[in-house]
Amino acid sequence: MTNLIPDINLKTVINQYFSRSEDAEITKLDLESIKGYIYSDISSLGKYICSVEGLQYATNMTELIIENNLLTNIEQLTNLKNLNTLFLNNNLIASVPDLSNMNNLTSLLLNGNEIKDISPISSGKNLRFIKINENRVSDLSSLSTLENLRELRAMNQDIEIKDVIESSDFYTLDVSFLKDINGEIPSKISPTHLGEYNSEHKEIIWDTSLISFESPSFTFESNDGYFSGIVTVDLIDVDQTVIIDDENLQNELIDILNKENNIITLKDMLKLRTLDLTNKDIKSLKGLECASNLYTLILDGTYVTDLQYVPSSVNYISSKNLKNEVNIPDDRLKSLINIVLGKNDKCVLTFNDIKKLTVLDEFANHINSLEGLQYAENLKILSLLNNKISDINPICALTKLTYLDLSNNNLKDLSPLSSCYKNISYIYANNQKISIEKSTNPQNNIFNLSLDFVKDIDGSVIKNITPCQNGIYNKEKDSITWSLDCIPCDVSFDFAGINNIFSGTVYVKIKIDE
Picture 1 (tube, helix red, strand yellow):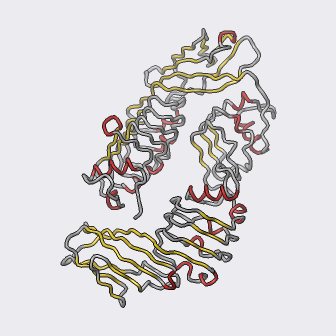
Picture 2: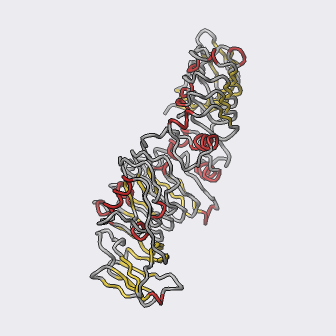
Picture 3: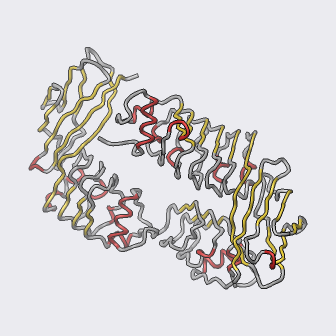
């Protein structure tokens, strides 16, 4: 049966909410029925939750608290429109997704994470309370647009930057990258190593002899005390010219850095914190790896195909609608294709890449989508046994396919192959496991299920049906009727198609229609 909650510890917490056994299967209807809150704190429950996958279906949930765990990605939560409270303190979250769909969200706590860029938080227009203490935030100015904001706490930030120390008796650091919610530099700047802060020029000056063997640092605090922290500077003692291969990228950087000549140095690159290249005619990022202080990179609508030059400091990257990219939403399928083609996982897969595929074989890797393979026009052998595939539409027009094995997946409909299956020499699609949910308004505890969703490879509704739980199969009406002792309950049936190609079991969870 399909597992909607892959994280075992999150599954345990949700089942505790329903007061049932920890390993009970959780359905979409279960998640939709959560109208209160889910709470997990390792200090009290000892649950090391790493993923919130599946919670995107909890669309009626109003509060979510997962603190002191191991979360890194919270993208799945962004469509929870009824959520008003989100506490994710003390996890490993490095980036915040767009919150524009979370119209009811008023309280957001993200203390003790790894966040550098908080600009996406500004999309949460109804936020009233925000706490982002103990992160790595240097710029709060994007939150100035939040008209409903009543309380903001951003204390004890721990910021690390790199800079070049030039051959001089003094080292000067521009601190204008620090901005409070009003876009102002915090008023209280206290350098270590006898550094002197010049508020007029917004810079700290150190004697280089005092910082030769230890990284300089300084603390900062805004007037209201709600934005504070420490900045540590990792100094590089040799400056150099940075070669930017892509002329359009070079021109963009020259403009952004306000350079009067065409020479870009390492010190220049270290000034970059965010970089938006949306819809720019850029094909290569080579040279950008030197921007070691960059934390947000937007590449939407560019021609970039190789992401290996993205600096490791970047914790949020957007690469939507790349001009040459084939959209492969399943990360495991994408990784498999990269391996087969001998490409780095950081590379973008292009149409030409996909056309090179002739054989694709992977067993038990939780692949759930074939989207993107519709462009694999030279694919001859496709074997993806024991995965989570439920839709074969993307491969129905692959004319060179001669061998297809999709046994042990979640397929209930082979009809997309009806016009081409006779050209495929070998087809195997047995032992499918399909889980569906049905709501009913029972009369005399009778439940009737139409079977028009189980279709054979020739497009017909499958006739070889074996009901379980004393169900009665009506071949003429393509339906099964069960007399039930109680609802909710679970029933199932087995099916087998023509020529022993397609078979499996359908599990039906029946609930009362509210």
